[in-house]
Each structure stands twice: as C-alpha cells, then as structure tokens.
Length: 64
Image 1 (spheres, rainbow, N blue to C red):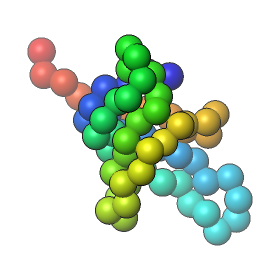
Image 2 (image 1 turned 135 degrees about the vertical axis):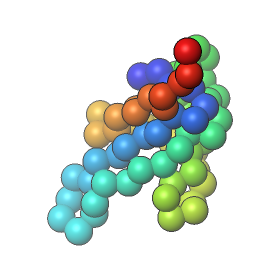
Image 3 (image 1 turned 30 degrees about the horizontal axis):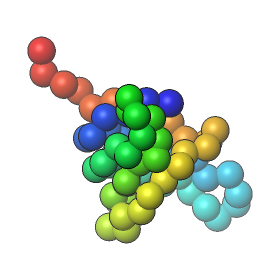
C-alpha cells in the first residue's frame, strides 16, 4: 500500500454497528509512501494508522 499526503483512506467496518471510517492522510511516515500514516478522520480525530486488509487508499485527483 502506497499513499501521499492529501490522499483519502477508507477503513471498512467489519462488525455490525461499526460503519466505514474515512480520513485524510496528513503525514506519511514510512519510506516511499508506505505506512504508517497520520490520518485525520471525519470526526476530527487524528491518529497513527497501520492499515490492514480492510483499508483502501483513494488517491486525490492531482492537476496535470
């Protein structure tokens, strides 16, 4: 998994009552875009994320 600052990350909820969580990657701490990522979630919480198989990076649209 690779990401850049500004990309979105979607973590799928895998139990009843726990929906998907979406956040913006504000810092990439791994080498070459690899995790861990500092993520600001929609609820305002910011945390360090080591994404698992239930996470998907959604690249931000960049201008040409």
